[in-house]
Image: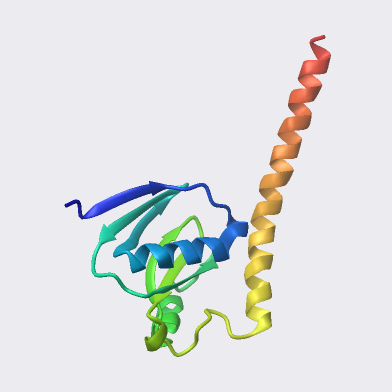
Length: 140
């Protein structure tokens, strides 16, 4: 039996709840997330466990160790980081707070960080598209 499994799944930052639920279902089957790259989830086989998965988006952590320690003190296990996305999980019975953020201000700050980066990407896509259209028009 294989100890690792790779699953390709196209999810976006806007599907956070769906992704968390799917990862929890994989853990119930004994497949626990150990690595992520775009649309590629790597799992390791273990005992089936009930986990809750949550994510944070932080691109400029000044003291990552302290940041992680805050969540670990609240019962969360830090799994990995990918391009600013921080992946956490916990066993529902062993966590002090069932959410990574307990106040609206922190939740809003997370989504503002995400909007800033996504907004930049969308603006680049629009500018590139306009440039391509302009080039095509000029060659006709």
